[in-house]
Image (cartoon, helix red, strand yellow):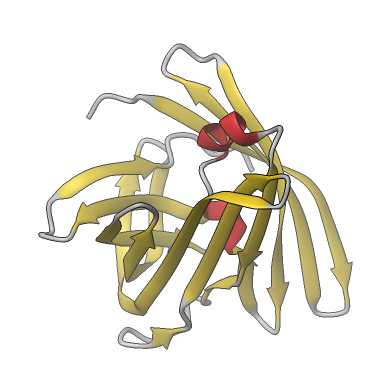
Length: 187
């Protein structure tokens, strides 16, 4: 329960086109001393009442800095977050991410991530330092293949008009590895 860093999100732009909305968001990662370690900008979408973003957002940008002078190819699917009206038990589409890093036409490193068996577990009230939130709780399995295969799972709490409130990561035996939680929210 000791913070090893913080991530700050800032809405830079909101574009509305009919019923569809595109959000441009800045993500800043800070170490436990408050020093910035990485900044990224990404887009998220609300189309047909469904919120989604590119799975590439799930890449740990801080760890990718070591490859900044190399060729990086990313193939990522859309990752959907359903509305609060979605009933418990609803299954969601899988998410995929393929990453290839190399140089001079030679692939040096490949990573494949499959987020699967995604489903809505329940609706739940969650209390954090940022307040109390009515949340939709998602559970999903995560299969990662780099040099070795790693199977894990995660549980995520989402609140309407805000986004993810809490995320927990578990190993393949169900042991909690770590979590992130919303500590401050400035509307």
